[in-house]
Length: 376
Image 1 (cartoon, rainbow, N blue to C red):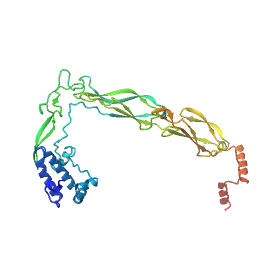
Image 2: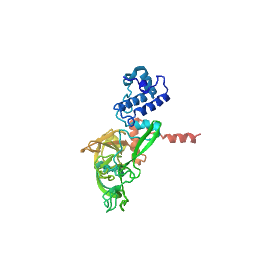
Image 3: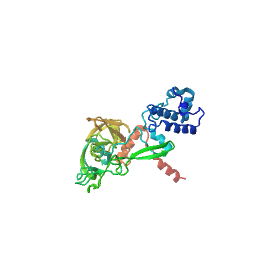
């Protein structure tokens, strides 16, 4: 197993500056653009592995004590920055050469290949009941459509794109960059044609050469039963049109559900509150309440306490994937103490008080307090 210090040609007491300087020197020697020897690529990967390890204090300390096996046992990645190719090479060179990219192993995307259009988002507001039971809703949105005048080419009728004079149709230009490691040929996208290799000299008058135009569209979407606030509905191929014959993106409709005056939703269950009198709580009663399906009678059991609940099974929110299945409706009962009584009601409560306490109702606390201050 090769020694990282030997690979870089430094001593075990080398500073980070010495390690960096050694890497620059060795990188120039074994760089794949400079050295065409069959083993140059493998040696360059070893350089990257050694450099990455010795420039990291934790990795270096572990390596000094236990070697490469110790790094593996400690959970460190020992593949090096180029283990999967040269995709990370630019990161190291950017730190040395001020951000110049050389594109090893990655290549540049083909600008003439079909490109999908962008996905779009549309936020709409729906009623609480629409979220519960579903609905059809017309929506309006703006998106990019392929220009019908030029069929997406961007060129006016009777004309066609011409070969770019800057790159001669290659879509790329080469420049020589001089660095501390020597001269390197830098390949970049042609700034004149943006990599397409062609230029439109007579642009389409409708889309101004872009190949796409902005249009407002109306469509009807189906809102499934059981959706919740911030649910998303995906409408395929209603986003922006693609380019070079690529598919259109998708439209994502985000639902904002208005709150209900009567119900509170929690997952598949809905909650509502009902107030009853003390007499109804004591004796029980049959009352009518509002549910998602309309008015319904429920039974109040005698002796019910304030805060107790009554469950109506299957009267809640439908399951989106199985609309026939629904959650429950939970009714929270509140016993309301009356504040305004008729003489008859007051006499009845007085009599009830006497039966429950074996004494007559005393004057109110407020009256007592007033009496204390009046006699002072």
